Each structure stands twice: as C-alpha cells, then as structure tokens.
Image (cartoon, rainbow, N blue to C red; front, side):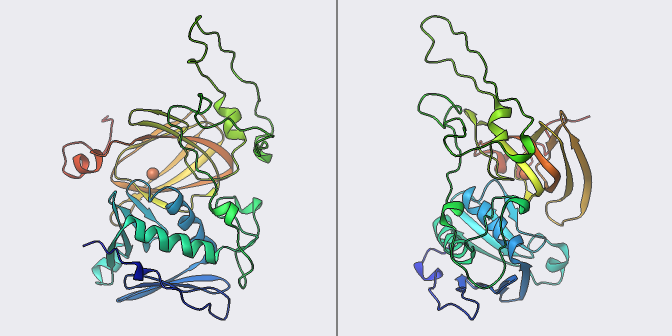
Length: 328
Ligand SMILES: [Fe+2]
C-alpha cells in the first residue's frame, strides 16, 4: 500500500551543522559536514554527501527514471510509474541473505516532495549536483546558503524535436549556453535546409554536436527528439555516472565522441557481468536485466536511445519479451 500522507515530510529544526533531518516512512535522512546518513528499522548506511546529492538530483529531475536508480550498492529507488519504492539492501545479495534489506513504497508525489526538500536544504550555494566536479564548488562543510537555480534547472524534453517551432530552443551564447571547455573544437555550423515550396515551416534540422557541445550538465539524458515511444536522449558525460542505473528495458547507447567505460552488473545481486569500453562510433544495447555505471575521463557525448512504451517492464518481466534485442 503506497503511503500518501503529508506527515512523511517533517520539518525538524536544523542540527548543529545547520541541516534539517528528513523522514520518509520509517527511513530517516540526515547529513553533517561530509556525509549523508540513512537509517531504517534493520540497518543504517552512510555515503559521502556529494555521492548522495548527485543521484538525488537526477532521481528528482528524471521523475525516478526507468527502472532502478541505485545511489550506490545499498540504497536507491524503483519506479513503478505512479508509486516509487525506496529501498536499502534490496539489490544487494549480502544484505538480502542477512535479512537486512528493507523496502517501502510511496506515492510518487510524496517521495518527490521529500527528495526536493532534502536536495534544497542540503545543497550549499557553491555546489551544483549536475555539474562535473571540475566545474562546481564544494558540497562539504556546514550549511552555507542554497543553489535553487542549479537544482531546479529546466529539463529538456522535446515534444517533437529541438529547434522545431514552439519546441525546445537551440543553445546559444545568448541564451546562457556557451561552448564547454572540453568541446571548443566542435564545429558550430548549422545544416542548410532546402525545403519544398510550401513546407518551409515544417522541415527542421539542427546540429546535434553543436547542441551537445553547449550542455552545461553531465550524466543527464534529455529528450531532443520524440517519435511516438522512440526517444533520443543524448547527454554529455564527465567523471562518473552518479547513479548505478538498473534497467527495466533495453537501452541503446551510441558513443558520439571520446570514450566511456562501463561497469555492467547483474541488476538483482550486483554480480559483475561485463566491462565495456565504448569509443566514438561504438554502439551497445544494454540488456533489460542489468545495472550499469559509466566512467568518462574527458567530457564525452553519448546518445541514449530509450523506448518509453509503458508495456515494456511487464512484457520483459513476464518473459514475453527477451532481455536483449539481438541474439548472436
Ligand atoms: Fe541505463
């Protein structure tokens, strides 16, 4: 039964470091100068606060995404599309075997409100959870202001395609998106459009490399084109993917520039399944029963191709569709 009472969000006086403590069902969340702490009836967990705030930011911005967002090997969320599980140890073989795992289910709006309040309270003025470590300040220390502009930035979600009339705009110097320091060599030309007479307002094209060279965030797939359930979600990556994403459907990856290395693990247990190195031009289909974390030494461009069909998790979980789109 999903919990939906407003009591989940408790306004508690700040602790000696200036941060509020939050509760969500029987879970509690607190932070000090360096760490985030999570407790539940059968255990407790601590994480470096930067490694906690980065997945928290993405989980909120992505609407809990597809499948599982593991903050690390212990805690995270499962999206049931209307309700969300928060779990501890659920996808960790050893926690499960020891009986220390714990899961509670919440209406999406409830967990979203608690997460948003926590992210707002725990993010200091200098820190941007979406930015690469090289391009933001410190998340550590006693409470020092807030960074509402960074944590509530607009998420690109094109209805048809970036640049189409009335849709998401292109990125330019003038609208606040300068070329990133790692992409100064990316050409900035735009395609020439030669439309049949009468179709001038309907034919649209843009330079995706130019667009991505001006992304101000990392590890944040955003929808640049949509054709029914087929979503192109490119993103720019630098340093480490802050979440370990557990798929509930196949995801296609097209490495558009530079290189990312992926750790691929079993979704349920965390057992290592593969190490994948993707160089520019490489294509991979991540299976529906894995979880993965990427490492990008230099800012790189990755096209994530998602199938948004609401039927896929059920069809795959019931065995009516395979976990992989290709058999060799
Ligand atoms: Fe994924």
